[in-house]
Amino acid sequence: MSADDALVVSHVTHRYKERVAVDDLSLTVRRGEAFLFLGPNGSGKTTLFRLLSTLIPLQAGEATLLGHDLRSDAHGARRALGVVFQAPSLDKKLTVAENLKHHGRLYGLSGAVLRERIAAKLASVGLSDRAGDLTEKLSGGQRRRVELAKALLSEPQLLLLDEPSTGLDPAARIDLWRTLATLQKQDGVTLIATTHLLEEAERADRLAIMDRGKLVALDTPDNLRSQVGGDAIVVRCDEPTELARAIGERFGSEAAVIDGAVRLEQPEGHQWVPRLVEAFPQAIRSVTLGKPTLEDVFIDCTGHRFADDQTPMTKLQ
Image (cartoon, rainbow, N blue to C red; front, side):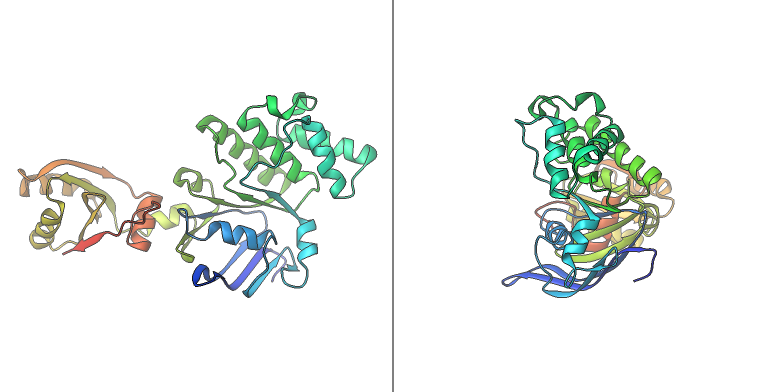
Protein backbone atom coordinates (compact mmCIF):
# COMPACT_ATOMS: atom_id res chain seq x y z
CA MET A 1 0.00 0.00 0.00
CA SER A 2 1.54 3.33 -1.07
CA ALA A 3 1.19 6.64 0.74
CA ASP A 4 -1.22 7.79 -1.99
CA ASP A 5 -3.64 4.92 -1.38
CA ALA A 6 -6.64 5.34 0.91
CA LEU A 7 -7.98 1.82 0.38
CA VAL A 8 -6.51 -1.36 -1.06
CA VAL A 9 -8.79 -4.40 -1.45
CA SER A 10 -7.26 -7.68 -2.58
CA HIS A 11 -9.29 -10.78 -3.53
CA VAL A 12 -12.02 -10.15 -0.95
CA THR A 13 -14.83 -12.72 -0.98
CA HIS A 14 -17.78 -12.90 1.39
CA ARG A 15 -20.47 -15.58 1.54
CA TYR A 16 -23.79 -16.00 3.30
CA LYS A 17 -23.97 -19.79 3.36
CA GLU A 18 -24.15 -20.77 -0.31
CA ARG A 19 -24.70 -17.25 -1.65
CA VAL A 20 -21.63 -15.28 -2.68
CA ALA A 21 -22.28 -11.61 -1.87
CA VAL A 22 -18.81 -10.29 -2.77
CA ASP A 23 -16.85 -12.33 -5.29
CA ASP A 24 -13.03 -12.01 -5.45
CA LEU A 25 -13.00 -8.20 -5.38
CA SER A 26 -9.72 -6.31 -5.88
CA LEU A 27 -9.27 -2.54 -6.32
CA THR A 28 -7.48 0.54 -5.02
CA VAL A 29 -8.89 3.94 -4.03
CA ARG A 30 -6.54 6.91 -4.02
CA ARG A 31 -6.46 9.54 -1.29
CA GLY A 32 -8.66 12.54 -2.06
CA GLU A 33 -10.87 10.69 -4.55
CA ALA A 34 -14.63 10.62 -4.74
CA PHE A 35 -15.05 6.90 -5.41
CA LEU A 36 -18.48 5.34 -5.88
CA PHE A 37 -19.68 1.76 -6.00
CA LEU A 38 -22.65 1.53 -8.37
CA GLY A 39 -24.98 -1.44 -8.64
CA PRO A 40 -28.60 -2.53 -8.30
CA ASN A 41 -29.93 -4.13 -5.14
CA GLY A 42 -28.25 -7.48 -4.61
CA SER A 43 -25.01 -6.48 -6.33
CA GLY A 44 -22.93 -6.72 -3.13
CA LYS A 45 -22.61 -3.03 -2.27
CA THR A 46 -24.10 -3.25 1.22
CA THR A 47 -22.00 -6.26 2.18
CA LEU A 48 -18.89 -4.47 0.96
CA PHE A 49 -19.85 -1.39 3.00
CA ARG A 50 -20.25 -3.53 6.10
CA LEU A 51 -16.84 -5.09 5.51
CA LEU A 52 -15.08 -1.75 4.99
CA SER A 53 -16.78 -0.17 8.01
CA THR A 54 -15.68 -3.18 10.13
CA LEU A 55 -19.26 -4.14 10.99
CA ILE A 56 -18.46 -7.67 9.83
CA PRO A 57 -15.03 -9.34 9.65
CA LEU A 58 -13.27 -10.36 6.47
CA GLN A 59 -13.78 -14.00 5.50
CA ALA A 60 -11.32 -14.23 2.63
CA GLY A 61 -8.89 -11.79 1.06
CA GLU A 62 -7.21 -8.69 2.46
CA ALA A 63 -8.15 -5.03 2.86
CA THR A 64 -6.10 -2.09 4.11
CA LEU A 65 -7.77 1.22 4.91
CA LEU A 66 -5.62 4.32 5.54
CA GLY A 67 -2.75 2.03 6.45
CA HIS A 68 -4.81 -0.07 8.87
CA ASP A 69 -5.20 -3.77 8.11
CA LEU A 70 -8.88 -4.64 8.57
CA ARG A 71 -7.99 -8.03 10.02
CA SER A 72 -5.36 -7.04 12.56
CA ASP A 73 -6.13 -3.37 13.18
CA ALA A 74 -9.88 -2.88 12.80
CA HIS A 75 -9.87 -0.53 15.81
CA GLY A 76 -7.36 1.77 14.13
CA ALA A 77 -9.45 1.80 10.96
CA ARG A 78 -12.55 2.77 12.92
CA ARG A 79 -10.79 5.76 14.48
CA ALA A 80 -9.67 6.98 11.05
CA LEU A 81 -13.11 6.60 9.47
CA GLY A 82 -16.21 8.72 9.32
CA VAL A 83 -19.29 6.64 8.52
CA VAL A 84 -22.74 7.65 7.31
CA PHE A 85 -25.10 4.69 7.39
CA GLN A 86 -28.10 4.26 5.12
CA ALA A 87 -30.46 3.95 8.12
CA PRO A 88 -30.90 7.16 10.16
CA SER A 89 -28.88 7.22 13.36
CA LEU A 90 -30.06 10.48 14.96
CA ASP A 91 -32.19 10.77 18.08
CA LYS A 92 -35.12 12.88 16.94
CA LYS A 93 -35.96 13.99 20.49
CA LEU A 94 -32.55 15.61 20.95
CA THR A 95 -31.40 18.87 19.42
CA VAL A 96 -28.90 18.91 16.59
CA ALA A 97 -26.11 19.98 18.94
CA GLU A 98 -27.04 17.34 21.51
CA ASN A 99 -26.82 14.59 18.89
CA LEU A 100 -23.35 15.74 17.93
CA LYS A 101 -22.30 16.18 21.55
CA HIS A 102 -23.13 12.57 22.46
CA HIS A 103 -21.35 11.28 19.36
CA GLY A 104 -18.27 13.39 20.05
CA ARG A 105 -17.94 11.95 23.53
CA LEU A 106 -17.70 8.47 22.04
CA TYR A 107 -14.49 9.69 20.42
CA GLY A 108 -13.15 11.17 23.66
CA LEU A 109 -14.01 14.77 22.81
CA SER A 110 -15.27 17.15 25.52
CA GLY A 111 -15.30 20.70 26.76
CA ALA A 112 -14.23 23.59 24.56
CA VAL A 113 -12.69 21.28 21.96
CA LEU A 114 -16.01 19.50 21.43
CA ARG A 115 -18.00 22.76 21.35
CA GLU A 116 -15.65 24.25 18.77
CA ARG A 117 -15.71 21.06 16.71
CA ILE A 118 -19.54 20.97 16.71
CA ALA A 119 -19.73 24.60 15.61
CA ALA A 120 -17.19 24.04 12.84
CA LYS A 121 -18.83 20.91 11.44
CA LEU A 122 -22.32 22.39 11.49
CA ALA A 123 -20.94 25.40 9.63
CA SER A 124 -19.34 23.11 7.05
CA VAL A 125 -22.73 21.57 6.24
CA GLY A 126 -24.62 24.87 6.38
CA LEU A 127 -26.59 24.23 9.58
CA SER A 128 -25.06 26.63 12.11
CA ASP A 129 -28.43 28.26 12.69
CA ARG A 130 -30.15 24.94 13.49
CA ALA A 131 -27.91 23.77 16.35
CA GLY A 132 -30.61 24.31 18.98
CA ASP A 133 -33.48 22.83 16.97
CA LEU A 134 -34.97 19.45 17.73
CA THR A 135 -33.87 17.00 15.06
CA GLU A 136 -37.46 15.92 14.44
CA LYS A 137 -38.22 19.45 13.21
CA LEU A 138 -35.71 19.24 10.37
CA SER A 139 -36.37 18.20 6.79
CA GLY A 140 -34.99 14.94 5.45
CA GLY A 141 -32.17 16.71 3.67
CA GLN A 142 -31.21 18.67 6.77
CA ARG A 143 -31.16 15.50 8.88
CA ARG A 144 -28.85 13.89 6.34
CA ARG A 145 -26.50 16.86 6.66
CA VAL A 146 -26.56 16.48 10.46
CA GLU A 147 -25.56 12.83 9.94
CA LEU A 148 -22.71 14.09 7.81
CA ALA A 149 -21.62 16.64 10.42
CA LYS A 150 -21.69 13.89 13.04
CA ALA A 151 -19.46 11.66 10.92
CA LEU A 152 -17.00 14.56 10.51
CA LEU A 153 -16.63 15.30 14.22
CA SER A 154 -13.60 13.04 14.57
CA GLU A 155 -12.03 14.80 11.55
CA PRO A 156 -11.64 11.59 9.54
CA GLN A 157 -9.40 11.32 6.51
CA LEU A 158 -11.94 9.08 4.80
CA LEU A 159 -15.71 9.29 4.74
CA LEU A 160 -17.62 6.07 4.04
CA LEU A 161 -21.25 6.51 2.99
CA ASP A 162 -23.90 3.88 2.30
CA GLU A 163 -26.57 5.16 -0.13
CA PRO A 164 -26.22 8.67 1.37
CA SER A 165 -29.14 10.24 -0.51
CA THR A 166 -31.70 7.55 0.35
CA GLY A 167 -35.13 9.10 0.89
CA LEU A 168 -34.12 12.57 -0.28
CA ASP A 169 -35.93 14.55 -2.93
CA PRO A 170 -33.89 15.66 -5.98
CA ALA A 171 -33.16 19.14 -4.60
CA ALA A 172 -31.95 17.78 -1.26
CA ARG A 173 -29.85 15.18 -3.08
CA ILE A 174 -28.12 17.87 -5.11
CA ASP A 175 -27.54 19.92 -1.96
CA LEU A 176 -26.01 16.93 -0.15
CA TRP A 177 -23.60 16.16 -2.97
CA ARG A 178 -22.61 19.80 -3.23
CA THR A 179 -21.64 19.66 0.44
CA LEU A 180 -19.69 16.42 -0.08
CA ALA A 181 -17.83 17.92 -3.04
CA THR A 182 -16.80 20.90 -0.91
CA LEU A 183 -15.47 18.58 1.80
CA GLN A 184 -13.49 16.66 -0.78
CA LYS A 185 -12.00 19.65 -2.56
CA GLN A 186 -11.38 21.98 0.38
CA ASP A 187 -10.57 19.54 3.19
CA GLY A 188 -9.03 16.72 1.16
CA VAL A 189 -11.45 14.12 2.53
CA THR A 190 -11.56 10.86 0.60
CA LEU A 191 -15.15 9.90 -0.24
CA ILE A 192 -16.19 6.27 -0.74
CA ALA A 193 -19.92 5.77 -1.27
CA THR A 194 -22.37 3.18 -2.51
CA THR A 195 -25.29 4.09 -4.75
CA HIS A 196 -27.93 2.55 -6.99
CA LEU A 197 -28.68 5.88 -8.68
CA LEU A 198 -27.17 6.29 -12.13
CA GLU A 199 -27.27 10.09 -12.04
CA GLU A 200 -25.52 10.09 -8.68
CA ALA A 201 -22.73 7.90 -10.04
CA GLU A 202 -21.87 10.67 -12.51
CA ARG A 203 -20.38 12.60 -9.58
CA ALA A 204 -17.58 10.08 -9.03
CA ASP A 205 -13.96 10.71 -9.91
CA ARG A 206 -13.86 6.97 -10.49
CA LEU A 207 -16.66 4.47 -10.53
CA ALA A 208 -16.74 0.76 -9.69
CA ILE A 209 -19.73 -1.02 -11.23
CA MET A 210 -20.81 -4.16 -9.37
CA ASP A 211 -23.17 -6.93 -10.41
CA ARG A 212 -24.00 -10.09 -8.44
CA GLY A 213 -20.99 -9.60 -6.21
CA LYS A 214 -18.48 -9.07 -9.00
CA LEU A 215 -16.62 -5.99 -10.09
CA VAL A 216 -17.54 -5.66 -13.78
CA ALA A 217 -16.08 -2.23 -14.64
CA LEU A 218 -13.80 0.37 -13.04
CA ASP A 219 -12.85 3.77 -14.47
CA THR A 220 -13.98 7.37 -14.70
CA PRO A 221 -17.59 7.84 -15.86
CA ASP A 222 -16.39 9.44 -19.11
CA ASN A 223 -13.96 6.62 -19.87
CA LEU A 224 -16.59 3.99 -19.13
CA ARG A 225 -19.05 5.61 -21.52
CA SER A 226 -16.39 5.89 -24.21
CA GLN A 227 -15.92 2.12 -24.10
CA VAL A 228 -19.47 1.55 -25.31
CA GLY A 229 -19.41 0.84 -29.05
CA GLY A 230 -21.10 3.97 -30.35
CA ASP A 231 -24.39 5.79 -29.94
CA ALA A 232 -27.32 3.97 -28.36
CA ILE A 233 -30.29 3.39 -30.69
CA VAL A 234 -33.55 2.11 -29.21
CA VAL A 235 -36.33 0.96 -31.54
CA ARG A 236 -39.88 0.42 -30.29
CA CYS A 237 -41.99 -2.06 -32.26
CA ASP A 238 -44.62 -4.77 -31.87
CA GLU A 239 -42.30 -7.72 -32.62
CA PRO A 240 -38.87 -6.85 -31.21
CA THR A 241 -37.36 -10.33 -31.55
CA GLU A 242 -38.26 -10.54 -35.22
CA LEU A 243 -37.05 -7.00 -35.90
CA ALA A 244 -33.73 -7.57 -34.13
CA ARG A 245 -33.15 -10.68 -36.24
CA ALA A 246 -34.08 -8.80 -39.41
CA ILE A 247 -31.67 -5.95 -38.58
CA GLY A 248 -28.89 -8.46 -38.11
CA GLU A 249 -29.64 -10.14 -41.43
CA ARG A 250 -30.03 -6.87 -43.35
CA PHE A 251 -27.07 -4.93 -41.94
CA GLY A 252 -24.88 -7.57 -40.30
CA SER A 253 -25.11 -5.64 -37.02
CA GLU A 254 -25.72 -7.09 -33.60
CA ALA A 255 -29.03 -6.03 -32.09
CA ALA A 256 -30.40 -6.92 -28.67
CA VAL A 257 -33.91 -7.24 -27.32
CA ILE A 258 -34.11 -5.65 -23.91
CA ASP A 259 -37.08 -4.39 -21.93
CA GLY A 260 -39.40 -4.99 -24.89
CA ALA A 261 -37.40 -2.92 -27.37
CA VAL A 262 -34.60 -3.44 -29.88
CA ARG A 263 -31.28 -1.90 -28.88
CA LEU A 264 -28.12 -1.50 -30.92
CA GLU A 265 -24.92 0.51 -30.65
CA GLN A 266 -23.41 2.16 -33.70
CA PRO A 267 -20.87 4.92 -34.38
CA GLU A 268 -22.52 7.91 -36.06
CA GLY A 269 -25.88 6.69 -34.81
CA HIS A 270 -27.74 9.59 -36.45
CA GLN A 271 -26.96 8.07 -39.84
CA TRP A 272 -28.57 4.78 -38.82
CA VAL A 273 -31.97 6.18 -37.89
CA PRO A 274 -33.11 6.90 -41.49
CA ARG A 275 -31.57 3.61 -42.68
CA LEU A 276 -33.61 1.65 -40.15
CA VAL A 277 -36.85 3.53 -40.85
CA GLU A 278 -36.38 3.12 -44.61
CA ALA A 279 -35.62 -0.61 -44.27
CA PHE A 280 -38.49 -1.41 -41.87
CA PRO A 281 -41.14 1.31 -42.25
CA GLN A 282 -44.08 -0.88 -41.23
CA ALA A 283 -42.41 -2.55 -38.25
CA ILE A 284 -41.01 0.49 -36.43
CA ARG A 285 -43.21 2.59 -34.14
CA SER A 286 -40.48 4.91 -32.83
CA VAL A 287 -36.69 5.33 -32.76
CA THR A 288 -34.68 7.18 -30.12
CA LEU A 289 -31.02 8.06 -30.32
CA GLY A 290 -28.71 9.01 -27.49
CA LYS A 291 -25.10 9.18 -26.44
CA PRO A 292 -23.97 6.26 -24.25
CA THR A 293 -25.07 6.47 -20.61
CA LEU A 294 -23.90 4.61 -17.54
CA GLU A 295 -26.89 2.33 -17.94
CA ASP A 296 -25.58 1.49 -21.42
CA VAL A 297 -22.22 0.71 -19.81
CA PHE A 298 -23.93 -1.57 -17.29
CA ILE A 299 -25.85 -3.39 -20.02
CA ASP A 300 -22.70 -3.72 -22.09
CA CYS A 301 -20.79 -5.24 -19.14
CA THR A 302 -23.47 -7.52 -17.72
CA GLY A 303 -25.87 -8.43 -20.52
CA HIS A 304 -28.93 -7.27 -18.59
CA ARG A 305 -30.63 -4.03 -17.68
CA PHE A 306 -29.90 -2.00 -14.56
CA ALA A 307 -32.84 -3.19 -12.44
CA ASP A 308 -33.52 -5.42 -9.48
CA ASP A 309 -35.03 -8.19 -11.58
CA GLN A 310 -31.89 -8.30 -13.76
CA THR A 311 -33.86 -9.20 -16.88
CA PRO A 312 -31.47 -10.77 -19.40
CA MET A 313 -31.28 -9.43 -22.90
CA THR A 314 -31.26 -11.48 -26.06
CA LYS A 315 -28.62 -10.71 -28.68
CA LEU A 316 -29.46 -11.48 -32.27
CA GLN A 317 -27.35 -11.14 -35.37
